[in-house]
Length: 266
Image (cartoon, rainbow, N blue to C red; front, side, top):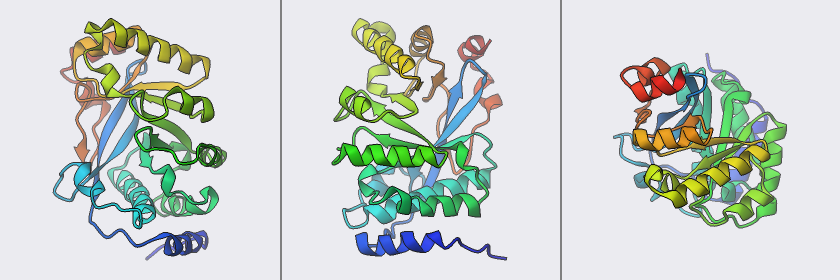
């Protein structure tokens, strides 16, 4: 039997009708784990865009236009929640969203709430990531989005921090719950004193502001050891686990055969 859809969904459909065309390009998701080294468990799974043939996100994003941005953003949220529920995910789900596609936070969140209810996925396990690579048109509007989401029980994260448009200025204006350090700053950090100084400083800033820090894009044991030396224990990257197409990776799989991670996790 089909479950009834809450009335609030209609408001979002009306908003979509006013804001542009429907995004009809087929897509799905892969999930890449964010591992908590200190706890020896998975903290969250990030939903990553894929084509139905498991091609990269770029092939999907290339089809997104200004007229279809809203529809795509809403559809991506629903797809991520649907697949997370289907895989039996019990950890947090991290969803990328487009701040410039959110017209009214209270109205535009209704589809997400509908999907969470329909697929029985707890709201307090959903994290919304906004990337620093997307030029933020209105920082005050983004701040309103973050505040609205937090009031509803969601958490937010700045993705790719340190490699985008706004940098520390964005962090000063919008204080998310989580800071994801860009892989460009992680690459070969154990060989680069400048990158080490930057990461050490960002970790200290995040700690002072009460934010969690995630180091993404970790590919070597040297990078992992260096990051752990800064007290950063939430990690993501190919060294930890590659994305699983329409599935999830278990903590046991991550720990098996990875002596550096086993040693760090104690």
